[in-house]
Length: 181
Image 1 (cartoon, rainbow, N blue to C red):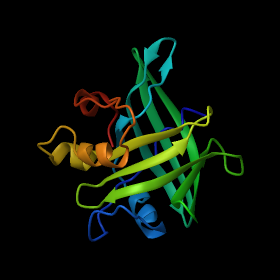
Image 2 (image 1 turned 90 degrees about the horizontal axis):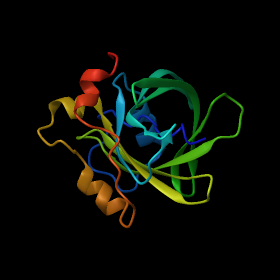
Image 3 (image 1 turned 180 degrees about the vertical axis):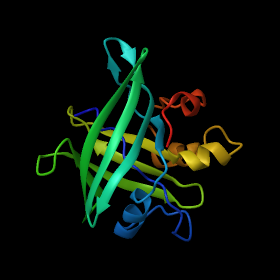
């Protein structure tokens, strides 16, 4: 389910940059009212030959370890919305959000590998349908609006996702073309 390539990772509250995030970091990161953008990832997706761009998610609700959100992306002149469900857990690999289209269905496990509470950005990995590990950088809209750096946390992505390709579905124009908060 390649359309599930985004999770929400934004909320201040952890004291420092964290290369070993825990369940609380993931829980706090997901519990935000801001949109969260995929700024860099190791793969590209397309629909009808049009590359997906302006990929973001917005939390709709959160109850304990259950997380509901909407994912949006553009291709060509079309905007697509998927309503998704996630279940938080702690695994040997770290904090995980398993995402599916509906509660109770099998899903894709996204592991939080890095969290920077000051910049409100996170890096997560998942295994795609081909069995390959993929890497994504998620950044809070608040950070994108406030930062003079057009690619906050990019250096962290390069370090944590060393050896992965770099695709950039986010461009600054995405903020002005996406529906409001």
